[in-house]
Image 1 (spheres, rainbow, N blue to C red):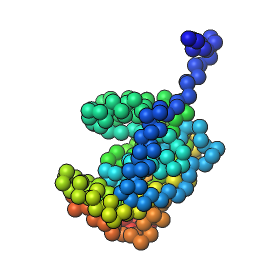
Image 2 (cartoon, rainbow, N blue to C red):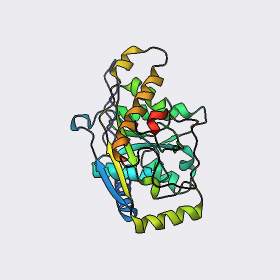
Image 3 (cartoon, helix red, strand yellow):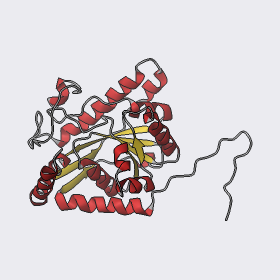
Length: 271
């Protein structure tokens, strides 16, 4: 067995390039079939070829329980293999947790002092050439209009620190597949989706320009970067729901609504 090459004195070690496991590649294919079973996937946009293999963070709106599967399926279509930042609770679920860890995904304890550990692990993932996918809202959005809420600053801080490119991704339609809450309601919504087959749209937008903010370094930079990222996601979402500019046509009665974290009136009015 060959030994790893040690860096010369004074030189930093070059992290080994991350490669998705066979299990993760198989699960991404399964996600594509899962979406095909319950809806019609439409993927538009892409990550520019020159950015592939460089540090990239995909920042997506979070509209429902099913949209992580839709996002993974869309990435499969675009031949991308992300490492996901997901709620730590999922990693404690039997079977699911070990699979997530084996696939290289990163747990986030949002209400814990260890939340920063996820950003450190994500920073390492970016250094190894992995594409990292995150939800800057940190939860399924509760805005009455279904527009992106105010984001948390973790994603922006990660991008500013690492120089990673942030690609905004807008999703729409996945909220029609699985209800927000209630086991019976969830099963019923999936059965309904199999017959109705809603259109599930995923759009990769143009990279968000953050270079000026990275050079600024002033207090509040992370907040300004976060709002710029959320605005980019909202802008990309406008085109996906042109016929639903104010309120969603499909209403999930199990999903609570709140304006506590709504960004501003323009975001709910289709900008």
